[in-house]
Structure formats: C-alpha cells, structure tokens
Length: 510
Image (cartoon, rainbow, N blue to C red; front, side, top):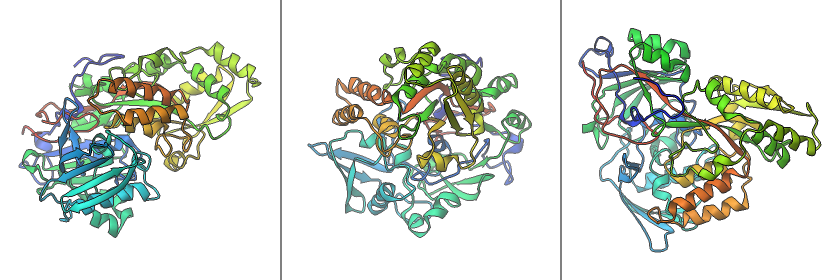
C-alpha cells in the first residue's frame, strides 16, 4: 500500500475495517475466540455520549452504543433502534417508531420513555455537550412504548440526521438515573453490539459481545480490548510483535507501519479530521476584529500540512475536506496566507510588534507540532505566542474560559449540526459561545427549512457554512485522514459509515 500525499485515495473506508487477529494471540480465553486487541495513545476521558465533546471519541463509543438511525455507504438514512420516522406536514414534528424488543445491556427496554429521558438529559444536564445540537428540540411526547414524537421549535428537516450517530447514541435510562457519573466514567451502558465488562480510566476498556443486540447475528467478534496510555512510537512494534492487532496511529507512524508490511487505513473521504484554531471573540484581544483578521492572514496552511501532517491530507480553509457536501469553494480564495497584509492590519489598528501576547492551548501532545508552527507564523507578524499544555484542557475549552485554542473534529452526521457545533449559541466547538452572527442565524433558519432532497439543499447548506465561517471564531488549518494500522488476516465489515468503525460482518482468520 502506497501512502499518497495531499489527497489520499480512498484506500479503505474506516467503516470497512479489516480488523486483525493474530492466530496465536487471539485472547486469554483461547483460540476459539475472536479478539481485537486495539492500541491507542489515550482512552476517552468521558464515555457518556451526552458528556463527551470530542467527536473522535465516537470511534470507540459506537461499539457500546447504538444510534436511533444510521447511514449507509451512500449516506442515506437507514433504521437502527428506530424502524421508521415521519414528519408532519408543517415540518416541525417527527414521529418515531422504535424496534420491538430492543434492550440495553443492563436488560432494560429501549422504549419511548428511555429515548425521551435521553433527549431531555442532553438538553438540560449541566455538563451536556449536546445542548447546542438539541437547541431546536422543544419537547418529546410519548405515545406508547415504541412510539414517540419530537416537537421542534421551528421547521427542521435535519433531525433524523442529527440522531444518526453521536447525538443519537442512546444511553440506558436506568443507568443514567441511578448514577450518571458512573455511566460516564466507569460503566457505560448502551444498546450497541458490545457490553463493557471492565473499564480502568486511562488504562483499558474491555468489551464483550452483547447477545441481546438487535443485530447480533452479524457480529462475529467476541471481544474488543482497547488499551490506552501507549507512546505513539511503540504502536507499530507492538503490532509487529502481536501485542496488538489493531492500532490508532498518527502521521508519524504511517510510513513505518507500511514499511513493516501492515495495512494502513488512510481514507480522507470517509474518516477525516480537520484541525483548527478556536478564537474566543468575547475575550481580548479577539474582541477586536482587526486581530482576528490578522491572524487569519498570518497562517501558512501549506507549511502546517507538510511539517505538521507530514504531507498526508490537504490544506483546509473551512471545517470540511474538499468533496464534502458542505464544502464551499468560495472560502478557498478568502484569507489566504499573506503575512505582509497581516502586519499592515495590525499596524493600522495600533498594534506594534510584541504588543499582542497570546496563550495557545493545544488539545493534546499530538498537536504540539501544529502549535509550534502556529507560534512561529504568528511571531513572524509580531504576535507573541506561549504554548500552554493544560491537563485540564477540556474544562477550559468547553467552559469557554480559553481565548485561543487548537483543536480538531471529525464532522457530524447532520450537516447542519456540524455548523451549529461551530457557530451557534451553545455549540460545543464554538469557543465564542454564546456569540453567534446574525448572518449565520439567517442562513441557519433557511437550511433547516430546506428538505434534504430539495434541489437547492446543497446551495443553502454551503451558504450557511460560509456565513458561519466568516464570523472568525474558527480558523481551519488542515484536513487529514484518521489513520489506523492492522494485520491483514481479516475480512471486510459490511458497514460503510462515515465517521465510525463498523463491526458487522467482521471475521478474523485463524
């Protein structure tokens, strides 16, 4: 497999993972079990889909949780826990019909009351990361055990898409009522294909096949063991030695894994991450539009791609990779690298070199290279940047306390949700919340009122994307593929779903 630079071909979809199993290393229970041993640098800090603001966490949460709806390879909605959904004529209410007999892993039913409780918890729980996504949901009405109606504040044809991945990964009502903190940190309970049997924070999580899963006959993996706390440099050797048979890797390990004869999953079309700068427009100095504009022109994305991502991916002038339905071509010609213009803007606004001193908070150590490049680029136009590695980064970012941060996200199932997360009041990725622009709100209302099969849906979506991005709270840097390395003794998954790993149909060759 040859790694390609800038715009890698869709070598393998992440949802079609060829998950490996080394015959002699299948697991402690013996060779009759199919066990995935998955190495990661860090485990999720939160396991409740309502609490986690990290979109990348969806990858390791979807084995535990099932969404109400899902999407096929063609992007079209398909039933999961919900068998059907129907809009009223006004477009402001949706009636859902749940699958009969589905249960959570604690044996409690996946019924209308459980879904209502989940949605209301997402709307009201203090540490909910879904409040912004659920802004347009008014009430949930239980009709019977398997029928419920979601009433909207205004017409919105995006709701089924919103509920087709992270925002629709329903949690057990019984577990959440009993102890929401335990559900989040030590015993997640969902209705997905695998049940948590052990969780040691920051160390490992063990998942056993859940026979009560509604589509269990298509799950052939017996156990998934995810081990955290690994140094990135050790992952490829651990794959070679059989300690792991699957690993989440970074750009720095991609060529090493390929040279070792491992499969490298590298698909910018299906599983991507856009790294971006978040600016808090409510805090100095970003409450001055001139500073925001100068920072935008000071960024050299090509240098970030080549040095930070080792050339794997593409530059990004917006929070979507090229080819995405929300990608707006007009944004590609705006705010391109022009350090001289950045210096002029600052001088005309009364700022001398060294007047502006910023603290940049990267999400994790994996973003250190990007942070250092941004530090140098802003320094070149007279803005001094101190890089602060904060172990409590999440509290500062999601609490909107930071002024300047470096983060990334992997998209959303709902195109509109991807926009509201960045630019709407309460958006989990909107460091400037509650700030939102009038232009975005106008464009947001228009796209929500547009049926997804309408001829002008794409045009209205891209208009909303541009209106949000131009407010300056997000500065996209690079779009890179999520990378995984694995052995080759595996079968394809029958699932091909953007933004998540598919386990249906996967078998391990002994």
